[in-house]
Length: 419
Image (cartoon, rainbow, N blue to C red; front, side):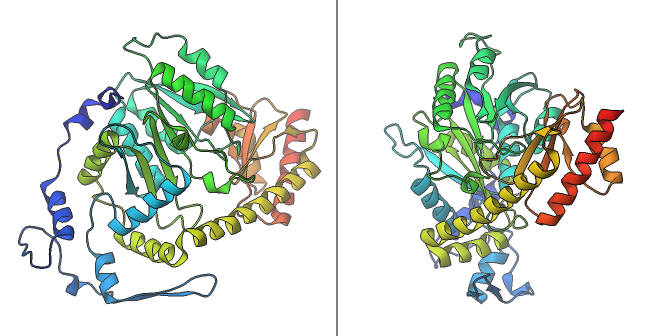
């Protein structure tokens, strides 16, 4: 893999921050090391001495003064070392990232401010004005918000009830020869519990997509915050677990499993790409919140990998039940008025309404009836085009609320059809 092909001029021009380098050296140095180099504040001036955390199962975790000092101080840009190692162990256990070349292990991991931060910095490291970027459609609006102002050309690749369609990816890519200078180089997708569709890729499709990526030398950006919220087991293997070239950049998040407010995610992938993202972090956020990282680390250390698995099972079962309730409510109120497929994971139901366009119906009329959905055009590359779809999230609503919401939506569809 020639990773220089994927990096833009700004990213390749970034240089390490000498202060950030000193931070890493200081944290790894011997006790005898005397430092008058860093600009770290003295932790003795911080007002927080310690903290106690009570988990939902009653477990009490104590963060004593020594742990709190670490939590309140600057840390290394890649993340708190013990947390980085824990998450790397999880990745090895679940995804088995590739190791190639005489140097052996060639992948690494960064802790980011949620996976969104990692996605944003990755695109900023690799996309130049005029570049063509392949985007699964419908797609996550947060990613579209990153890409649309970047003066690049977004090329939609269609998906269906089984996720991104490999035949459409091949159709799109067949327009170029591998040697063409303007050939797309990046493919972005959500492989499990897709936002907004709730759909997931089968292993067969993943292998076909990966083969096409090899054929046209694409880097796959695997945005997978719902990996652990797959409703069927065993899990469909990730792109990273299928990777033999080092052409997958994977984004994970603890937001859906432990806390969205902590803002802790990770990006895993080839060292040459991660090095550039880390330099961007040095120049912007410096590192993800150390306090959030240390709190998360205490929880993960308490659980271990087996405890983490047990927590995941509890969370997944919660959303599985929510999904079933949502489907039951949809069948009761929307049969004949809309179409949908059962989500394979995540927290969304993607509804195709029997109307020409949902934008005004959802943004104006539904709000007047005190019910909120997201109109499908928000998930399109071209948001100005008519769209029949609506995203409904079942994560927070009770059974009664879901029934009421779909009853109101059904009334609006009937009114739209009659007019």
